[in-house]
Length: 357
Image (cartoon, rainbow, N blue to C red; front, side, top):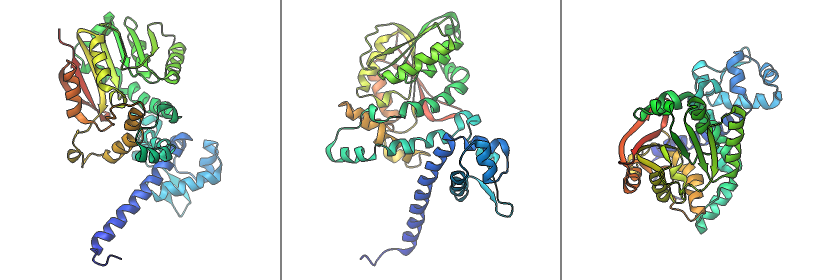
């Protein structure tokens, strides 16, 4: 047994490990609380007993009481021991309830149990290489769609699209737009609903996601949108679009360079591509203080990188970074005009790329 340990450093690391364990447990319980709407109910009803909260949320009191124990010890819920009452501080509600929109951090806690479902498979791929295909992430599209929808509903029309010069005017007049790697298609449907004179095409290789997108478009009565089930690396749509978007889609691809080249070829000369992707550096040493760096690398290892490798891909990973993005975009022929940040979306860079005339 080692006897020359620095006891001060050992004690500090012990506390850090304990906080990591508690944080992981809290993330799981936050995910549960979001799914059964406990944060929303607590925000609405104010200080309450476990019985009142369970009744208001139409849930089993014993489970609610144990959940409250986890949330109280995590410092998320406040507890009045004298009256046996629980409350959700308004500052916490502003980051944990559905009314918080894109600030709702409970949306992202859902990735923890989602990734845990494939842990055993990831362990095997550490030994053998390769990766876990999309089909194994049974609820990924639903979780991703919910998190993305909060951002699109609040930011897409008024904040994100105006990053592109004169795009509002062109969309009002009528242009052809594509969203590549559209997932469940909510961004496409939001744009189509707001700009009826333009036509919109959502492209994704997941039949499940495309089905969800088409159903939403039908429910909204949209006649200016279509969805194609197609590999983003094989677009074959030469100069078909005036404007193209991608939202957190490039780094997941098996062949991201082919995808970007396809986007270039699919744009009309002078057209813009607006690419949103995780804000990070391509160099680990520059990510040491990244506010969600550990989360980013973990999601990458257990989903983004692994999915790409499952299809014999490049395995860029979620933390591929701005330097690598610049390299790939400019190699494809794009002029990278701006890398912007958006209020309300702290996690993404917005790359404004233009196909030269």
